[in-house]
Length: 106
View (cartoon, rainbow, N blue to C red):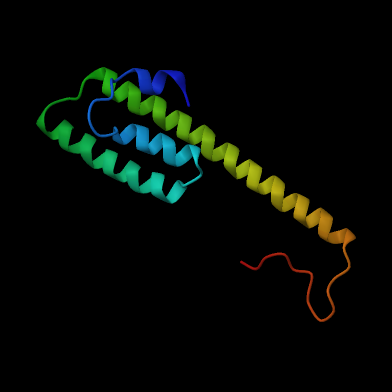
């Protein structure tokens, strides 16, 4: 995990939402991470309605967002590479009788 993300705020009691987001992204659970981001966004909006949040909190959210973006781009590239490998390898395998050679339909 990224060094600066977790050390900025001490963990007391239940796990921080930011940690749960980071864990979800790191494990490839992007739908769960999206839901957690929505929850974090709601929390930040409610905090901003009362008073401006500390700069450190916003910087921490920005770092987490940048890290999540990099992880998502990396995972997308990895998935694309796997699809490309499947496409290439399928050219060398004979097609099963009676089935088309289509890998996926969208």
